Image (cartoon, rainbow, N blue to C red; front, side, top):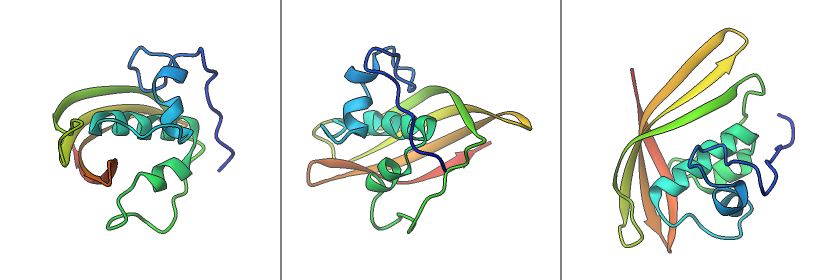
Length: 135
């Protein structure tokens, strides 16, 4: 895996929020601030896949389900994120779910990941727990 290639501060955020990197996922990936909601964490995790940052993915994965290491595939180009639904996961919630579709491209063609993810907030920080991949 090559080193993460982050967007510039004035570039659009890869998560598709419409915000600039510096006002969206950038500070979360840089550790300057925690994600305020489960959806914001999920968006930052998508951005981490898009820019190739496994350290952020591991740091935001709940210790009970976190793998010992994570190798990202350099051949996967993450193209678009669509959030379909979010339940709970707000600043005063302890749990939340986010359903999303992430579109990608590889040398073999286009694909999509449709997942219903679960999150938990502990010590004021959101963590990804696990997810169910949907067809």
